[in-house]
Structure formats: C-alpha cells, structure tokens
Length: 181
Image (spheres, rainbow, N blue to C red):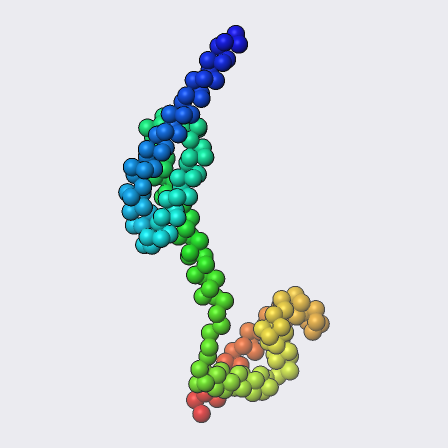
C-alpha cells in the first residue's frame, strides 16, 4: 500500500513539473500576443504589460491545478481578459470620483442669477400668509416630513398637505409675477 501512495505522489509531482514547463513555454512563446490582447482591451501598452505579467503570476502560482497542461494558454488568456476588465472598472471608478470631487466653479453671471432668484423666492415667501409660509419653510428648507411639520405646527397631516399645495401654487405665481416685471 505505501508503494501505491508514493507512486501517486511521483505522478502528481511529474504532472506538476510538466505543467510548470508548459507554463514557461506558453509565457515565453505567447507573451507578445497576450500583450497585444491586453493592449486592445486597455488602450495602454504599459498597463497591458502589467496585466499580462500579473496574469502569468496568478496562473503560474496555481499551475498545479491545471488538469490539462495544454489548456494553460486558455487559462492565461482568460486571466488576462479578467484582469483587463478589473483594470477598466478601476479606472472608471477613479474617474467618477475624480470628477465628482472637483468643485464646479460658477461664473460671476451664474452667481448673480442665483442670488437674484433666491431673493425673488424670499420676497415671495414673505408675501405668503403665515401658515403657508411656515409649512413651506419646514417642508422644503428644513426638509421635515409631513408628519413632523404637522406635529411642529399643531396641524393635521391633511392640513399640512393642503397648506403645502396652496402655498406652493401661490409662491410660484408670486415668483413668476416678479420675473415678468
């Protein structure tokens, strides 16, 4: 029985050696085509070389798992494709965060228009009846829910909804009327 187990160990060891040799042959023989594949996916030759090297390291570290050593190239290609996808995803996320982290610089004209519009809304709010003004300020400026607004003002939720609707309509009419002047 021990002889049989040793035979299995030698067989697995020889299979591992042959797959390691195949990995070396695949890497040396297919490196340029794998770099071209990655470059086509990434549009960057330097990143493509890095991806191919990473793919080779990953596949070579697990070469003993490859049952058919002649499929090493297929595993290597798939790993290159997967790593290229990961790289593209990473670049996309990095671009999104870089774009969103930069504050947008408003022009002087934009700032003046914003101030004018805010002043128009504030003047219109001041012209509203007290309850409508209170409801709109609580709902939209302080972002209170209907229930919170009702509790703060001692009203029913239906009254808050009615004051909101009527107040918003009146506010819009006041702002539109001021803009037409």
